Image (cartoon, rainbow, N blue to C red):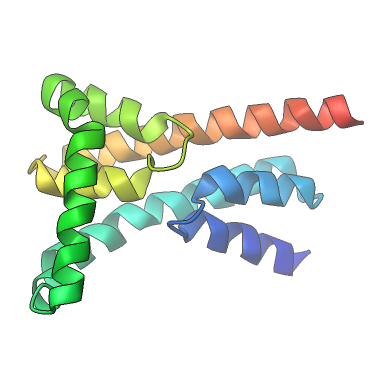
Length: 152
């Protein structure tokens, strides 16, 4: 049981799933529905300060390496084209909406990169990402619970 909580939390921290994968993993493995939501949501929120630290402090050193620089430019272009119009146009609310959509390529990792690229004030960016993560988590949690009732 503790191992399943740890795995759900690790999925929620991972750029390959975030809470969109952590929550269903925990629920489908029989964990407490409220604790799964709480732990996965909290783990996903932790990504924003970690990403900001990485982007502000560590990223500049890695940009010296050609492979990393090409990859970083590719990711930056994807973030700007994927979210740029909405975030530029709607700012805080656009960022919430972008992070909220429970689809691959959206979420707190992309939202953090977009916040950094568009130079959104850190406090506003944190709250926009947190609200977006919360709404996304509610959608995924509700949909997973509803589908589990249909299976039972």
